[in-house]
Length: 92
Image (cartoon, rainbow, N blue to C red; front, side, top):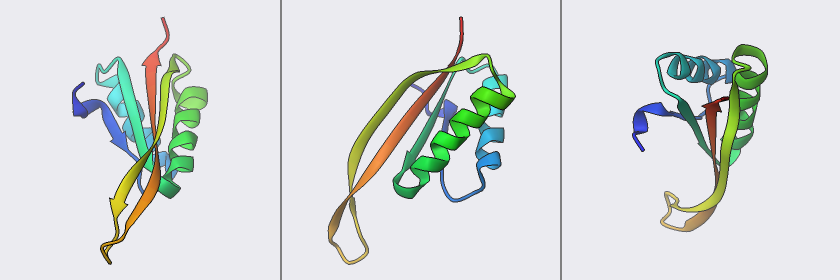
């Protein structure tokens, strides 16, 4: 799957990511993937819900994947970080 339809969630306000998702959907992508890790997961869920309910009611959740990724911290120790991937697709 091409990476050009992926929106990575970080520390910006939710509306920044909502705009990115809406822009991707309007540019011809039939699917948009929202990815987040750790504390940004709640922001990813908020983004998907705002897009679905307020801006693009024609989009629906196709798939949600959750998982754990192993990260190496600055001190060299490993830690587990939760991750989520929400795929939004146009309803048919």
